Amino acid sequence: MFFQKYKGLILAVAGAVIYMVTTLYFKDLDYGYRVCIKIFAAIMIIVGGIMIEDSNRFYKKQRDNNV
Image 1 (spheres, rainbow, N blue to C red):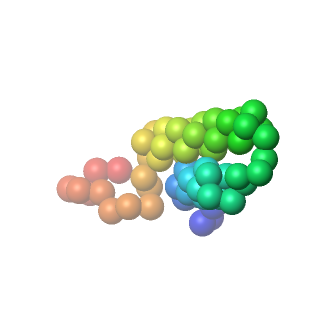
Image 2: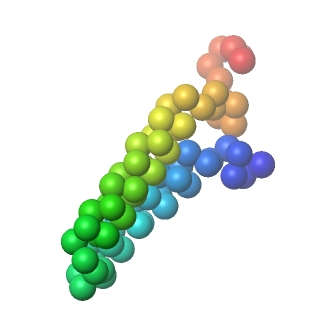
Image 3: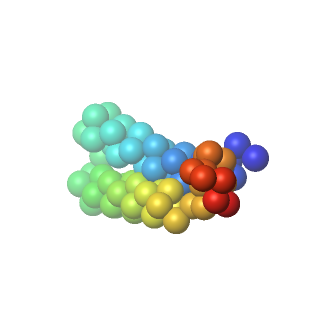
C-alpha cells in the first residue's frame, strides 16, 4: 500500500539521486554515457512529477468530505 500511494514521489526522488550521483561521482565515465544517464534521470523525475500531479490523493484528507 505504501508504494501504491507514493510511487510517483519515489520515482522522482530516485531520479534525483541518480542524477546527483552521476554528477558528483562519475567524472571518469565517458561523456556520452553520463549524458544518457542524466537524461534517464530527468525523465524519471518528470514522470514521477506527472504521477504525483495525476494521483487521486485518496490518502489525504478531503475538504468538506468530498471524495
